[in-house]
Image (cartoon, rainbow, N blue to C red; front, side):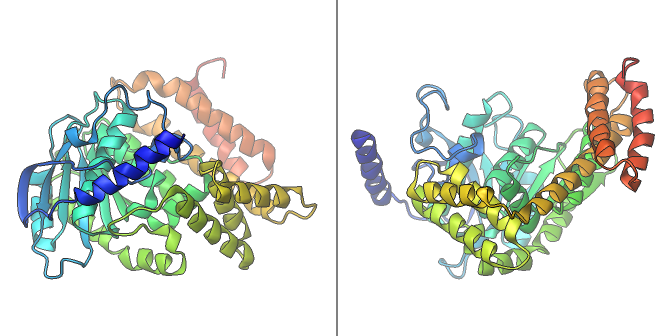
Length: 419
């Protein structure tokens, strides 16, 4: 442990000395990464922030400085002022997306970071690390506005973009997955953060085999959970990159949420990262724990506050703050009076209803005949039947249960005779 701590300290000094001058304004085809990311990448690929990641998490011999990206920087009047940015993850290993994003970036003064070497053939943990190495390399040289940093990607790259954004929403204002949906995290506090902070511009083509997933499942599901979401279906387009026109409209819509994101960060600073730095694990834990305690003390936010405390305890269990958060959580759970439980149950019910409706619609109406997803329809239908059955059992006389009984009969037709 002493050797490891010394290595980290020495690296931090070296990183400071090695800081390069900001690249010139305009487009640069290939920029090498200068230092390893300071962003908490391990939390984006596991359920904890790890002080010492397992050696096999990235594979043998991973080198941050072997990574690179394409970069566009607008002309900046004030070098200290944070600027907006778009991070793009390709489905292949070549950087892509710049030509499609070029018009909106050059017109609106938005930086563009096109990730290299992080295609669908790269293991997800390594893929995430490459993206965050590239993003933070730019942040070391040019301050980026977290409220206006948007992460995008095509197909599998879009799924990685979603995974990074919902794990680390403090670094982003929105997501632009193209031709794909994505999964939310299971932690309640991260779902709350996504609803409070992130906007999701979901793009698909009218003949994209993933259209049903985007339009009928992901978009409605996220919207029902309170995440600001909108779906664009581009005409005469299959599973392909969105047009510059569609991307400009989507970016403009994302920008409409920037004031709300800034307002949230004013009240709760832990919801937004610094433009050019990252907190230590202990300081990050302290900031989240402090926000949780603040919400615990405020009327109407008891449950959300408790989930933030749980987030600090689960994410940094080995830190002093994580242990203090765990103690507070255990004390709250040991109390006879637990008013937050009603909110917990209500949120779980909302989530189940949203999933049953959206996933059910996808299974019934959103999977193209002959597509590779068609064989998954029976299992999907069975899962939705299980969700509806739980909701019906919970409140048999409710309007939701009436809806559920009707949907279950429709789903049985594709779930199999035994269901």
